[in-house]
Length: 349
Image (cartoon, rainbow, N blue to C red):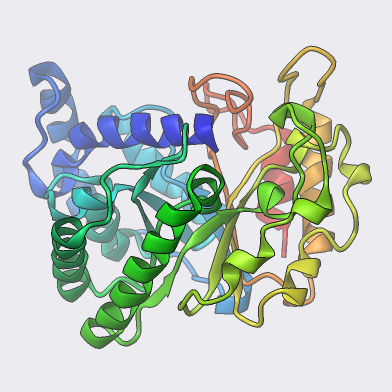
């Protein structure tokens, strides 16, 4: 989502400093670098034993520590190990060639902390649906070489090319067509370089369903669904971001087939790469509570059981200062105290 995109950008910017923990090339501020560098030795020498779930039960959180000081950053991985075997993160596609980028940090720490990194790289601005760069021959060549160098070096288990790409379609069908050509070509090249890497792209689920009412400010009209965008796209899976709170004011209002119904449109594994529901009011007349957030997770568990969904990732481990409606979507408060949603998520199967 647009605000979520800003959250990712903020996290990625802060992570430049946190990257010192692994590779020693961070460059934020001298004071921050000094603080973070203090913990590099302990992180490098620490191995957290975590049992990674079977693929059909993968779950986790995005890279969202309380802060990026050394103590909080290190503590995040202990928290994340309890939340599941997956940590996702990413940034602009060109950050893949930067030694201190979020994708590089995620890959570098995945061994010591024994989690599955899910790398998500972006080609468009989620705020307005515009491509970062027009996908002409020179851009495609640059993107291809950047991705292939990263994939060849790290052999990631999962990599998504493009996040909420249906927003691109809504702004410019021609740009989406160009993205499809680019993505399909890159898909084959990635599989040649790393056959075991699971390659996919990510859509915004509510918009995909034609649900544009509620906090989106439009109207719900399933006749304007965008499922046809799945046609002609290569990939080993299909990803979706999902924020049903933008449409429904109570978890009990969500149809029981809200997620399983995706299977009517694809036979590929389905990944929910961003899931969120706030623990506090997000707008006038749009209220929520910690108990309601936990209730949504319980409902989510029921709606995604039975193997219909292969991966579930909650958008925020801790509350983040990123603006509504995302500020209070963490499973834990910014002071580290667990919300009721935390236990609901940890116990979710």
